[in-house]
Image (cartoon, rainbow, N blue to C red):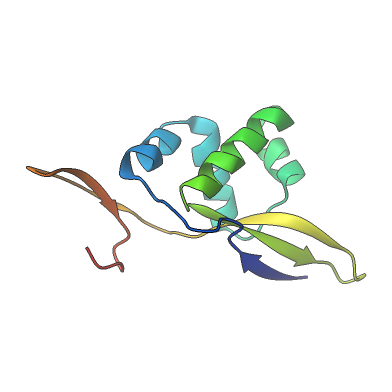
Length: 110
């Protein structure tokens, strides 16, 4: 099985407030954790979150919009392929200061 990741968003807009809002949801956090261990399909994520498929797809869209996961294609040994999702981060840093709240990836420039 192999994967090819690609973010389907034309231009990511990782708004700090939106990222924090997404991370405030338990289902979204579970999806992020599960996809950090390798690409997962929406069906696999539905099973792991014990949520409805509609809820999982809404959370997947929120995570895609905030650039926390990316869509990828997973190729199976038999040649079939399916859409899967993979975490794009392994950590975030939240900084609170006079200018407000910022959320940055530790390896990104601030």
